[in-house]
Length: 215
Image (tube, rainbow, N blue to C red):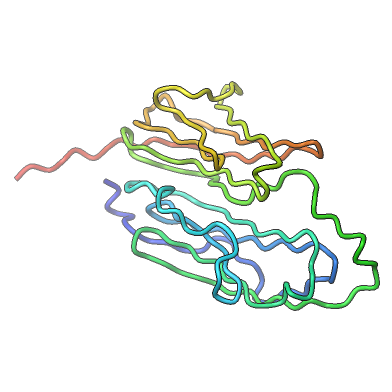
């Protein structure tokens, strides 16, 4: 096990402490965290869950990694004002950071708001290290999953097909069981719809498992 890094979490990127959002404009809040196990992230508004409720299934017991969570509002309304909290959880460790959002008037007509557009990938892991033999989930969460097609490709650019060790879930995550050295490399998640394409990358690095100690 990765004992030297066991159960820790810290933020790598944070949204500003205060954001003035333009009425009818777009707002994007992003935070990322590193830790062991690789952390799960979630956004809350005024204490209530907004998006990406922490999913413990994404955390592998013996892992190190970074997770990114992006919260996007395509058309800001007065109701968007409030305190937005990013929570990062790794094992029993939890940290949080708050961004206060103020909505400021804008002269443009609200009818110009456009909620739809190219896909927005809002949760993924740029890097993930896990012990060989373990199972992992590489998240790829799309803001409007019912409007996008999600495809995973491996380091060779070949589509990842469902087989004994690989599965793409309904939420867009790529689950890999019994990770091996052959799995090392960059996996790419691509989401597409009629308006465009978005993609993110995850570099998977298997680690040698630590031999069990004997008395």
